[in-house]
Image (cartoon, rainbow, N blue to C red; front, top):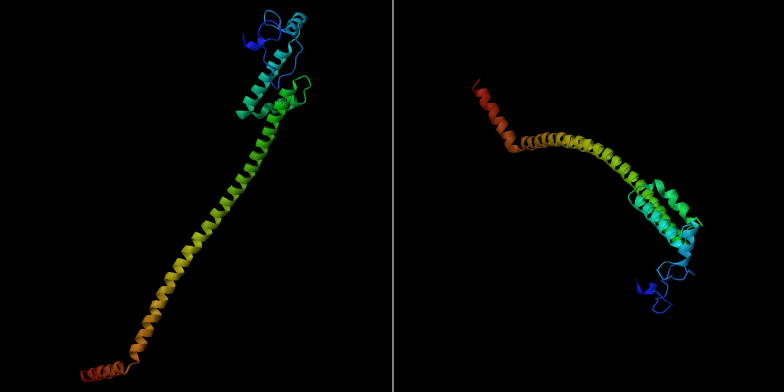
Length: 182
């Protein structure tokens, strides 16, 4: 038996732990409390049993919620206003309830952001497809222009050669040779 529950007076008892509700019950010789015995004899539930039950219910609710089962959030929220529960359990329920609200708000915000990102991705894919078509069209046009430039460049080079004195002289000689062999 722990030292603070020893039989006989207050000698050797540790002070009450913080957060526990004060009790006026004195320890009996068999280690039970007189108040517990009185409630049990009356068919009631002791404060400790009620606390344990409330904590067990709170734990079960929190486990369900942490597993993603949010159907029981209303039961958790109801615990915050249940005057029959110990204050510590109500405060814990309120703290867990606030966490649930914040998680739900964060999930809602993230779902919105995800939807926005998916829409942006869809738009980028549409624009990418258009740009791919435009790039192919432009590449084809560049090839056509390159061919045209090559033809123009060749014609210019031929014209430059044809305009030289040497080429004119060659044309005159070629004409003379043709006339001679006709």
